Image (cartoon, rainbow, N blue to C red; front, side):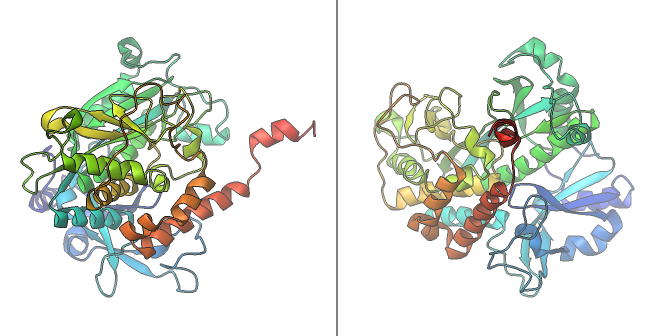
Length: 457
């Protein structure tokens, strides 16, 4: 079976007719960055789905993480009947999944059933729209991301049965760059690296991270939509492969307050339309071009208002703690890990790393925010502040990343830049998602409250 980066539609057809493939996953991202969709019988895929797509209830991009329909959306509701949307296969995304027997995968775009028009509030289309704006302006955004996760000794079902209490990390000590400890975890992480490679993802390396049982996997940078699709498969595949080994993996930003948070750092740069060279290096300070300066200026200027797209859940904001490797300051520096933005690389590799997102980010949303903020900076020639030297955690004169979801909600609600960059429909859709997430949290009594107040109040 072919193991090249992508599988052509013609190769897939040959392998279906030859019996090597009997199932095709046709999927799309929801607003939590989860992979959702259908498993199709392979012959039916050839006869119908490859040409016409599949129909899916439109509540899937207007529901919570428990698949409960949420009120307040313009896009769909009970009053509108929760109709269908069509998931149309993007044939450039076909891959084979070696950890699932005789299974292929294709990522889809969501369109209106009747008109075929793209659904603008869907995550993949949100990112596509920002990439299209960049193309019109003469740029190709290139993105790489570093996503961390925790591995645990028990599987998902066992942890759920215990209400996620008594969680045992797969490692006994902080294993940042530690070879012996990561060798002990190669049963899962080695399988992950090899099978993602065989699925066509451009895996570079894995490494132990600064937590017990914490790991990072890096994929080679690529075009924005392709990178987001890769992360969609990477995160879902990590959980599936871990489950097959009797383990569990989480991409929560902070699964335990005493543990190191898991990041989703975004490296980005703009390239020429032919992809031949980066537009970031130049003769300015720190070897930056004017385009890079304004791009960086835009990222910094929009970081607080766009924080919902980098840190989308209540748990996301647990990660932003002093001295935690997660930033708290909206500032930039040359190779300074205490700040929200870090200048790294040389020549065509010169780029900015946004350290704000956690591993729980929806890559489509976060990449869209990155491109939108950078383009806004270029269009308005926003100069970045001077680079900060020193410890960003202890600085008293730097703006701060929002400390809570409600703060991020209000910044997004009042953001004229967000409305301008994303349009009123997307702005409202994401605002309602965040408001409903906060309402859901406030309808919960936490374990902390029980321990603190049950007997003593």
